[in-house]
Image 1 (cartoon, rainbow, N blue to C red):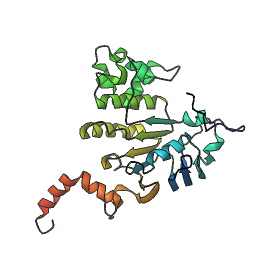
Image 2: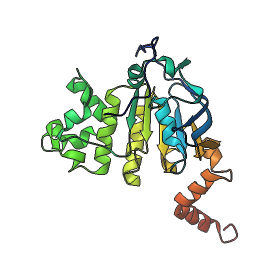
Image 3: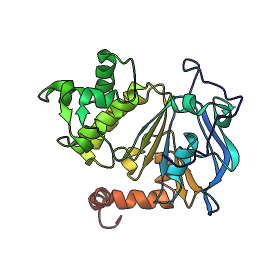
Image 4: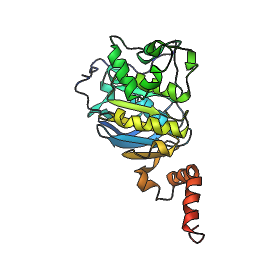
Length: 277
């Protein structure tokens, strides 16, 4: 709380009109370094049209989370610019920019309160119908209704009593209640098993409709359906393209694919005969 805030509104900061925001995001040759350290991201350049899905893949320290923090204006870029609907985000008020962005993180924090309050956390004037609609989109409504007190069930701090997948779906419902134009899924399904991930992924298709979505992931299964995937290494984009293109090109994406799908690939090769293997 005592930390100085680096990012402040300028005097002519523009308030976004929520009804006018389209969610067109462009990174134009963005470079950024924390303090006087080496740049965390270098020359990042991409365009996310309204409603598109952009995926980021890369190891720890590759710059994935930095890109998202810059988009949310936790920091301002050193070089280049980030545009939302053609407008430099430094010209927008921080509060109105962030009101259009919702994030689901890897680690879900649930407060010691009812599920209803956890979904509506930080929001005022929210109706029960809106809470239920968000939970339905996040594929959380059915398991909530099976709990002893439904939406009034109290969950413990850090969500004691709920599985990883259930906590994650509560977090997704919380994000969707904002009805954001930009949705960020930051390793959002890494805490759940593959089967639960597939279930959540199928729910995402409806969730993403009409929103620009950024997916940070370690699992290729989370990125397969992205319109463009950026592969990052040491702050730079080293590969970019769709899943179907990238798995055919020797490089980091193909390497990760082979590791994560080793059993599946070995089985496929075995069926094709020893000569192929």
